[in-house]
Image 1 (tube, rainbow, N blue to C red):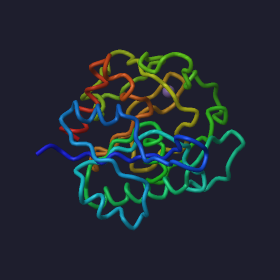
Image 2 (tube, rainbow, N blue to C red):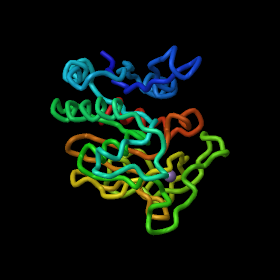
Image 3 (tube, helix red, strand yellow):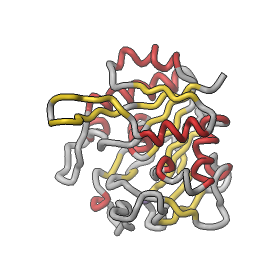
Image 4 (tube, helix red, strand yellow):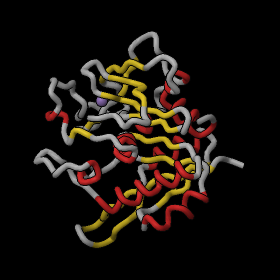
Length: 237
Ligand SMILES: [Mn+2]
Protein backbone atom coordinates (compact mmCIF):
# COMPACT_ATOMS: atom_id res chain seq x y z
CA UNK A 1 0.00 0.00 0.00
CA UNK A 2 1.29 3.44 -0.88
CA UNK A 3 1.37 5.99 1.96
CA UNK A 4 -1.62 8.34 1.67
CA UNK A 5 -0.49 11.97 1.74
CA UNK A 6 -3.16 14.48 2.70
CA UNK A 7 -2.44 17.75 0.91
CA UNK A 8 -4.16 20.90 2.24
CA UNK A 9 -5.95 22.60 -0.64
CA UNK A 10 -6.47 26.31 -1.26
CA UNK A 11 -9.40 28.10 -2.93
CA UNK A 12 -9.57 30.63 -5.76
CA UNK A 13 -12.01 31.94 -8.35
CA UNK A 14 -11.33 31.20 -12.00
CA UNK A 15 -13.69 33.58 -13.83
CA UNK A 16 -14.58 36.61 -11.72
CA UNK A 17 -14.24 37.66 -8.12
CA UNK A 18 -17.31 35.94 -6.66
CA UNK A 19 -18.21 32.92 -8.77
CA UNK A 20 -16.68 29.68 -10.05
CA UNK A 21 -14.72 28.96 -6.91
CA UNK A 22 -12.39 25.99 -7.11
CA UNK A 23 -10.56 23.98 -4.47
CA UNK A 24 -7.03 23.32 -5.71
CA UNK A 25 -3.41 22.72 -4.97
CA UNK A 26 -0.47 23.52 -7.28
CA UNK A 27 0.06 20.33 -9.26
CA UNK A 28 3.73 20.03 -8.34
CA UNK A 29 2.86 19.21 -4.72
CA UNK A 30 0.90 16.28 -6.14
CA UNK A 31 3.68 15.30 -8.58
CA UNK A 32 6.40 15.48 -5.92
CA UNK A 33 4.45 13.08 -3.69
CA UNK A 34 3.59 10.78 -6.60
CA UNK A 35 7.22 10.59 -7.75
CA UNK A 36 8.18 9.68 -4.19
CA UNK A 37 5.71 6.76 -4.26
CA UNK A 38 2.92 8.40 -2.25
CA UNK A 39 -0.80 8.55 -2.94
CA UNK A 40 -1.86 12.22 -2.75
CA UNK A 41 -5.30 13.07 -1.41
CA UNK A 42 -6.49 16.69 -1.48
CA UNK A 43 -8.13 18.04 1.66
CA UNK A 44 -10.44 20.98 0.81
CA UNK A 45 -10.92 23.81 3.32
CA UNK A 46 -13.59 22.45 5.66
CA UNK A 47 -14.94 22.78 9.17
CA UNK A 48 -12.42 22.08 11.95
CA UNK A 49 -14.86 19.49 13.33
CA UNK A 50 -14.21 17.34 10.23
CA UNK A 51 -10.45 17.12 10.88
CA UNK A 52 -10.50 14.00 12.99
CA UNK A 53 -12.13 12.01 10.20
CA UNK A 54 -9.90 13.54 7.52
CA UNK A 55 -6.72 12.73 9.44
CA UNK A 56 -7.90 9.14 9.98
CA UNK A 57 -7.91 8.75 6.16
CA UNK A 58 -4.28 9.79 5.68
CA UNK A 59 -0.82 8.56 6.70
CA UNK A 60 0.92 11.95 6.53
CA UNK A 61 -0.03 15.60 6.21
CA UNK A 62 1.44 18.11 3.73
CA UNK A 63 0.83 21.81 4.43
CA UNK A 64 1.31 23.92 1.31
CA UNK A 65 1.99 27.56 0.47
CA UNK A 66 -0.48 30.40 0.07
CA UNK A 67 -1.94 33.27 2.05
CA UNK A 68 -0.31 34.98 5.02
CA UNK A 69 -1.35 33.49 8.35
CA UNK A 70 -3.89 35.78 10.04
CA UNK A 71 -1.87 37.50 12.80
CA UNK A 72 -4.75 37.10 15.28
CA UNK A 73 -3.57 33.50 15.62
CA UNK A 74 -0.31 34.70 17.17
CA UNK A 75 -1.77 37.61 19.08
CA UNK A 76 -0.98 40.54 16.77
CA UNK A 77 -3.03 43.12 14.92
CA UNK A 78 -2.64 43.34 11.11
CA UNK A 79 0.37 45.52 10.15
CA UNK A 80 0.11 47.56 6.93
CA UNK A 81 2.63 45.25 5.24
CA UNK A 82 0.48 42.15 5.80
CA UNK A 83 -0.58 40.33 2.62
CA UNK A 84 -3.88 38.58 1.94
CA UNK A 85 -5.23 36.26 4.63
CA UNK A 86 -7.85 33.50 4.74
CA UNK A 87 -8.76 32.84 8.38
CA UNK A 88 -11.10 29.96 7.48
CA UNK A 89 -8.17 28.16 5.87
CA UNK A 90 -6.03 28.96 8.92
CA UNK A 91 -8.65 27.54 11.30
CA UNK A 92 -9.05 24.35 9.29
CA UNK A 93 -5.32 23.76 8.90
CA UNK A 94 -4.60 24.59 12.57
CA UNK A 95 -7.19 21.95 13.48
CA UNK A 96 -5.57 19.48 11.04
CA UNK A 97 -2.18 20.06 12.67
CA UNK A 98 -3.65 19.51 16.14
CA UNK A 99 -5.35 16.32 14.99
CA UNK A 100 -2.30 14.97 13.10
CA UNK A 101 -0.20 15.47 16.26
CA UNK A 102 -2.88 13.77 18.36
CA UNK A 103 -2.93 10.80 15.97
CA UNK A 104 0.90 10.73 15.73
CA UNK A 105 1.05 11.33 11.97
CA UNK A 106 4.09 13.01 10.38
CA UNK A 107 3.77 16.52 8.93
CA UNK A 108 5.71 18.40 6.23
CA UNK A 109 5.12 22.15 6.01
CA UNK A 110 6.27 24.17 3.02
CA UNK A 111 6.49 28.02 3.06
CA UNK A 112 3.15 29.14 4.59
CA UNK A 113 2.95 25.57 5.91
CA UNK A 114 6.12 26.15 7.95
CA UNK A 115 4.86 29.52 9.21
CA UNK A 116 1.51 28.03 10.21
CA UNK A 117 3.20 25.11 12.00
CA UNK A 118 5.29 27.56 14.02
CA UNK A 119 2.13 29.47 14.99
CA UNK A 120 0.25 26.22 15.75
CA UNK A 121 2.99 25.18 18.18
CA UNK A 122 3.06 28.56 19.95
CA UNK A 123 5.58 30.63 17.96
CA UNK A 124 5.11 33.91 16.10
CA UNK A 125 5.93 35.51 12.73
CA UNK A 126 7.27 38.78 11.41
CA UNK A 127 4.37 40.02 9.27
CA UNK A 128 6.94 41.33 6.78
CA UNK A 129 10.71 40.99 6.44
CA UNK A 130 11.03 44.78 6.79
CA UNK A 131 9.92 44.43 10.45
CA UNK A 132 13.04 42.45 11.40
CA UNK A 133 15.63 44.49 13.31
CA UNK A 134 18.41 43.62 10.81
CA UNK A 135 18.59 43.96 7.03
CA UNK A 136 17.35 40.95 5.09
CA UNK A 137 18.50 39.28 1.90
CA UNK A 138 16.18 39.25 -1.10
CA UNK A 139 13.68 36.55 -0.08
CA UNK A 140 11.16 37.30 -2.84
CA UNK A 141 13.30 36.36 -5.81
CA UNK A 142 10.83 37.60 -8.47
CA UNK A 143 11.46 37.86 -11.42
CA UNK A 144 14.08 35.10 -11.18
CA UNK A 145 12.37 31.79 -12.10
CA UNK A 146 11.55 29.67 -9.06
CA UNK A 147 13.30 26.61 -10.47
CA UNK A 148 16.57 28.50 -9.90
CA UNK A 149 17.89 28.69 -6.32
CA UNK A 150 18.70 32.26 -5.26
CA UNK A 151 20.21 32.30 -1.75
CA UNK A 152 22.22 29.92 0.43
CA UNK A 153 21.18 28.30 3.70
CA UNK A 154 23.22 26.48 6.29
CA UNK A 155 21.80 23.10 7.28
CA UNK A 156 22.26 22.10 10.95
CA UNK A 157 24.31 18.98 11.53
CA UNK A 158 22.37 16.18 13.30
CA UNK A 159 19.06 17.54 11.96
CA UNK A 160 16.51 15.49 10.03
CA UNK A 161 17.26 17.76 7.09
CA UNK A 162 20.94 16.78 7.27
CA UNK A 163 19.87 13.27 6.23
CA UNK A 164 18.80 14.77 2.89
CA UNK A 165 20.88 17.91 2.31
CA UNK A 166 24.62 18.72 2.61
CA UNK A 167 25.94 20.28 5.84
CA UNK A 168 29.57 20.77 4.82
CA UNK A 169 28.83 23.61 2.40
CA UNK A 170 26.11 26.23 1.92
CA UNK A 171 23.06 24.76 0.19
CA UNK A 172 21.25 26.94 -2.36
CA UNK A 173 17.46 27.33 -2.18
CA UNK A 174 14.81 29.32 -3.99
CA UNK A 175 12.93 31.96 -2.02
CA UNK A 176 9.42 33.34 -2.24
CA UNK A 177 8.30 34.61 1.16
CA UNK A 178 7.81 38.13 2.53
CA UNK A 179 7.09 36.86 6.05
CA UNK A 180 9.41 34.90 8.30
CA UNK A 181 9.71 33.21 11.68
CA UNK A 182 9.98 35.57 14.68
CA UNK A 183 9.77 33.57 17.94
CA UNK A 184 10.47 29.87 17.37
CA UNK A 185 7.83 27.63 18.95
CA UNK A 186 9.23 25.80 22.02
CA UNK A 187 8.72 22.36 20.44
CA UNK A 188 10.77 23.25 17.34
CA UNK A 189 14.51 23.34 16.69
CA UNK A 190 16.04 25.36 13.87
CA UNK A 191 17.31 23.13 11.04
CA UNK A 192 18.39 25.71 8.43
CA UNK A 193 19.29 29.40 8.47
CA UNK A 194 20.04 31.97 5.76
CA UNK A 195 23.16 34.19 6.10
CA UNK A 196 20.98 37.11 7.29
CA UNK A 197 19.65 35.03 10.19
CA UNK A 198 16.29 34.30 8.58
CA UNK A 199 15.12 30.86 9.70
CA UNK A 200 14.60 28.60 6.69
CA UNK A 201 13.70 25.24 8.31
CA UNK A 202 12.26 23.96 11.60
CA UNK A 203 11.77 20.43 12.85
CA UNK A 204 10.62 18.24 15.71
CA UNK A 205 12.29 14.83 15.49
CA UNK A 206 10.12 13.09 18.09
CA UNK A 207 6.86 14.17 16.50
CA UNK A 208 8.25 13.73 12.97
CA UNK A 209 7.42 17.27 11.86
CA UNK A 210 9.60 18.93 9.21
CA UNK A 211 9.05 22.49 7.99
CA UNK A 212 10.91 24.37 5.26
CA UNK A 213 10.59 27.92 4.03
CA UNK A 214 11.64 27.35 0.41
CA UNK A 215 9.77 25.58 -2.42
CA UNK A 216 11.06 22.10 -3.38
CA UNK A 217 7.89 21.59 -5.45
CA UNK A 218 9.26 24.14 -7.92
CA UNK A 219 12.78 22.69 -8.16
CA UNK A 220 12.54 18.90 -7.88
CA UNK A 221 12.62 18.41 -11.67
CA UNK A 222 16.10 19.97 -11.83
CA UNK A 223 17.65 19.28 -8.43
CA UNK A 224 17.75 15.72 -7.05
CA UNK A 225 18.17 16.85 -3.43
CA UNK A 226 14.85 18.70 -3.70
CA UNK A 227 13.02 15.58 -4.88
CA UNK A 228 14.86 13.97 -1.97
CA UNK A 229 12.79 16.11 0.41
CA UNK A 230 9.58 14.56 -0.97
CA UNK A 231 11.19 11.08 -0.96
CA UNK A 232 12.18 11.47 2.68
CA UNK A 233 8.77 12.79 3.72
CA UNK A 234 6.77 10.09 1.92
CA UNK A 235 8.99 7.11 2.79
CA UNK A 236 10.94 7.86 5.97
CA UNK A 237 9.57 10.70 8.11
MN1 LIG B 1 14.40 32.67 1.88
